[in-house]
Structures are given as C-alpha cells and as structure tokens.
Length: 93
Image (tube, rainbow, N blue to C red; front, side, top):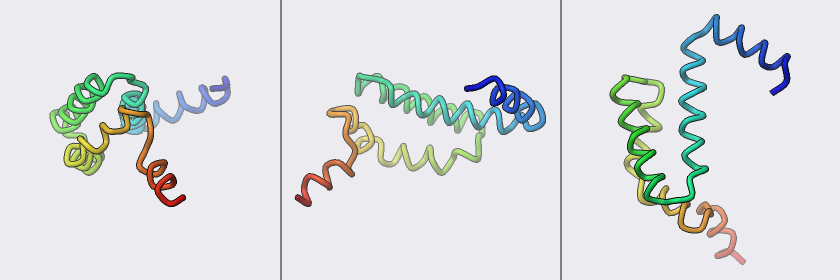
C-alpha cells in the first residue's frame, strides 16, 4: 500500500469505523486460505463463523451461514489447493 493509499484509508476508516471493522473481517476470512492444513482451516473457519454470530455482524450472516452449510465442500480446497473451477475445467477437456 502506498503512503497516499494509507492516508486515504486512515481518513476513510476514521470517518466510517464500521467500514474498518468490515474490511478487517474480510481480511481475516481471506487469510484462512493461507492456511496449509485442512484441519487448522476448519478450526479457523468455525471460529470466524462463531465470531460473526457472537458479535452480531449482520452484514456477514449470509456469508457465515453459507460457509457453515458448505463447510466440507469448501474445505476440499485445502486437499490440493484447487477450486471446483479447476476440476470442472479438467473434466470438460
């Protein structure tokens, strides 16, 4: 992030603190995908889902519920670091 971007983010987050919270929750969720272990990813995703509900982060309810409902399928990513899109593309050829 450049210094100008940092300055803008500081102003934006100061003026809109909810946006800062939302931004950091998105980053927290994205960071789960840096995990190498499927079981550690499961623990982190379940903790993230619990946090969303415990802190009543209503903007994330839909995402948290979708992840919870599809957790096993989502965790398959951690087996080979591939998404269904890659599998679908291979099956089509």
